[in-house]
Image 1 (cartoon, rainbow, N blue to C red):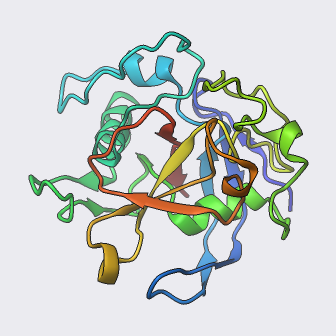
Image 2 (cartoon, one colour):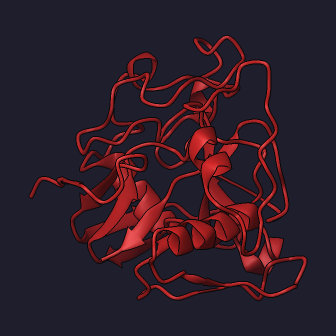
Length: 236
């Protein structure tokens, strides 16, 4: 089964991903584990600065992403925390007349955030969804030659680039490897790292070894840095 683009919102470009399973690599106190996945939708590209700063925020506002010398409306949004990202998902859902997925409390560690996976609004992908979509049926370190598919330390010139400037994977997703790391829903390893959340994919400043389909990093859900963004997803 070949995933097809879903004509829901051209600025986002959701692609339908078929059901399947993925083996994830553990770390720390967590062993490898297999996840069964229902079909879902995920954005063709990381969320852009234009989308993020252009969405109405008259409910619970998220911080405007700061401009950089090389940023533009088509570069991936960066300097956004995990909390910023889930708040943005709710705002975009409301603006699109969809049911928000997240209930967000006031815990500074974000451990009171709840996701309704049955809601039809926008959300972050789970870590399993992210890697399954990134791999697009492949099993190697990455889905193509690194210089063809990714902006990373060797070819990026030390900056984030407009989305979709490199070749997509077999399911039509761009920039899952390189350009910017992407927040996922999951806690990294709560027994060891508490509230730290997962981000995936490698970024423009990373060496080749950091740009792999299985590469995992983590940080506190309030972290904001210049090569970390997110990608939108929806349940079916």
